[in-house]
Length: 86
Image 1: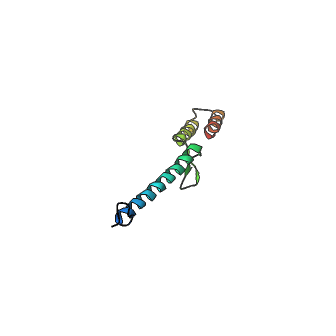
Image 2: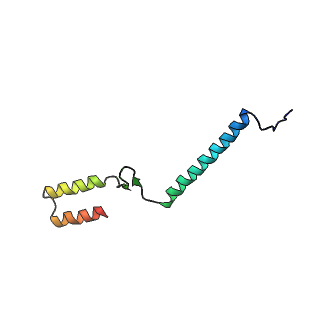
Image 3: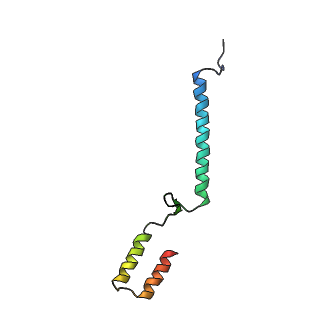
């Protein structure tokens, strides 16, 4: 008789598979966590460029509209444009 620790059969195969799967998940989580801690800027996957902060496009559009309406001077527009690009 094989005893309790025979190690053959479908149950043992599933246990080994689950252990390997758990180890793979742990390694993948560690890699993702390490990348997040390094503070790398996010990149847009479609363009391969850094993603822009939310609201930046709206702020630039509002600045252009204020300039187009004559609400601000050219100097104010250029200064605002420089500040928004930083």
